[in-house]
Image (tube, rainbow, N blue to C red; front, side):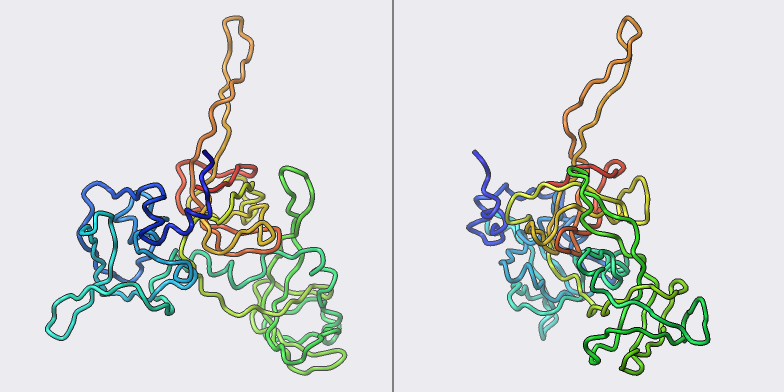
Length: 341
């Protein structure tokens, strides 16, 4: 019988949890954990669960809470509660007499302890990664630089035309990078953007004057600009997609041929396919074994598909998503399959 994925994603309540695959605790789990600086919710849950990405279930989080995980502070005590038959994690905080008082995860507020390590993905959430063709066609470009300079850097002014809204002050400068092609169709679905730096609108007009506030690389006439996005906080809890996702690894960020745990990969599915921040997918590979038969002829044997990694989706575009490899038992390569775990 085909498993109903939409029911699984709602398994964060006690009733749905009974219908999903049972949560499995690690051998000899601790009865409590004191939160320290540097902890992540994934890591904390890994002390209790064999599948730490399923921590929204052991927290009994509902759909809204998955999108806005709750506040956990360093110093809080995470308690494993087995009194109800099914495992559950609770936060315990000292009350007036110093005793620990369990508190139910109930009020959606900004979290302090993140889902996954923020330092690993911060550059990818604040810099442009993907430019789709329609964005490239409409993008603003540098048209001139002062005193006929060929290159500019931090503190230098430059000029652009066509800024539609003078209220937008913060901009990012980029250069189109390599095309990302769907491994299945060969179609170019987007281009990676080579981030050059940040700029601020100094004087509106035609042309408008901007100043480079941060330069990762030198900039040139013809380079592109896009409005700088607001800083993102990756607060979504890891969870299964609502529907079946079948994707492929398009690239490993940085132009690498192989990746592993803590690598960032691009997938050939995005918002249009139902992907969202917080989705967890498993990576699979169809391996082959090569050898020789008794006559010395080379023989290739297809091996069963192997699941070898988990990825956490943290940035989503229309047709492309970026994901962090959080667990991997082997190297990640372009073309590997990504599906619901």
